[in-house]
Length: 95
Image 1 (cartoon, rainbow, N blue to C red):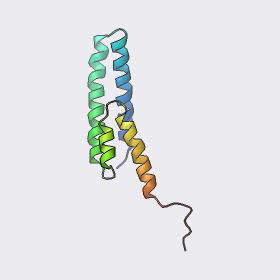
Image 2 (image 1 turned 30 degrees about the vertical axis):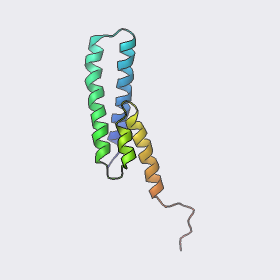
Image 3 (image 1 turned 60 degrees about the horizontal axis):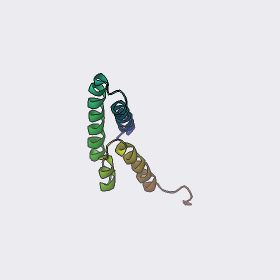
Image 4 (image 1 turned 60 degrees about the vertical axis):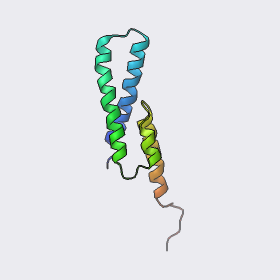
């Protein structure tokens, strides 16, 4: 499965959460909340569901994806390490 869509959704989740919290701490404009709330929710659900459907995702990676805001990016980072661990080392001499 291509992780490109997961990466985009994880970044969108983090950015929308930052915008929501910034809006809450400053002006609290209702149009910003109306737009960013559903955007963050959809991105969060996409990240969680997509991560849980990945075959290479371990239980730890799936649990990490549930953390709001940064869970998707952390899960992608763990997936990258998991993929590297599965690949053979280039230092191995093969006959």
